Image 1 (cartoon, rainbow, N blue to C red):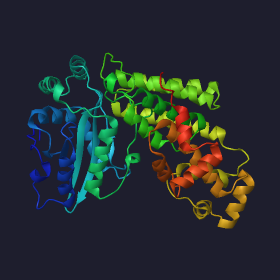
Image 2: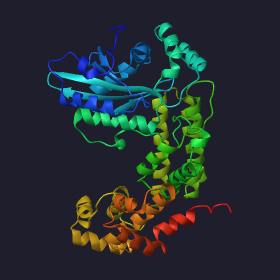
Image 3: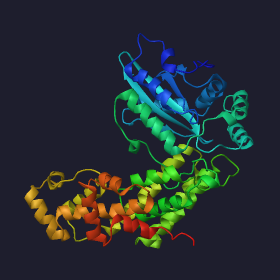
Image 4: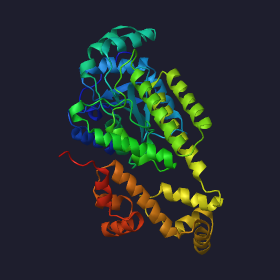
Length: 429
């Protein structure tokens, strides 16, 4: 359908079908839960690319749907939906910073493609947006480009953290799955696409602490970095520098963060002869990139790459491969229960043999190693978040807050509260 007329408001009611599925009914509930201050639209297509319905208001539906097609969003979404090797949900970026989320509902006699968004994570300047779109050859005509630019003040603008949370909720409601944010590729470091809050609203101390926690993950080669990554993405607006095109701010933020990460990797023991060329290659790749989705994936890859470079460097050469594998598994599993039986099954040993071998090689029992790893993670959470001590204890699977405090004091020498107070600057007299 070349010029669709999207149905306003509650799109599930507009889908011509024998009946509305329970999943689609759930989307009505989701729509009612999202505040008006966070515009989040959902579109429905069949797998032939025919538009069916949308919750987007009429004033925006036309230019947004045309932009989705002209920027190859629909073709890319359908290709992902048809590729059985691709795990949904997924994000799609564009050359002008628009981002969509996609997922698929499989129902009897029909598969439906659901598109979330689009959103800008930072609102571009209208003349620069128009210039970038016309630079692409007009992308099917100038009328919709002018309409899109005129409607820019009403365009959805959501932070990466908020948008991805809604995409995950939509996917789970449609599919019945219970995936988390890890199902989506996250931009590494301070998100280059977050709208910068006003200075008075920005908690600079929290941003600094989150940034330091990210860099500490690199210095230590900590492969269980996802929770810290998401924390940073929800706080930091990235580098608030506007450039000649809508992607300039994203590129600038990635370049700055890549520089910080490469320095942290050197502090973690990575040779400058490795760190500098590796960082330069990612910076050049960012400069050459023309798609916001690809830039986010590049940033994720860069951060992951540096962490694993340091991790492999710090892997104890005296540990056998099975014991190192157990240590890595522990690092990745600190927020859930871990038993010696789990580790034994992982490497194919009996529990008795694994516990004896583990203590012989590491000098600690399995339980003591897990406990020390959790205390180390607790220190990062105390440094980089304002989570209550009891919540940190629960998140890291300590049986009780008092037991967490006991373990922390035995390892660090002070209580978690005392440790956190020591990080706070003294109030001015």
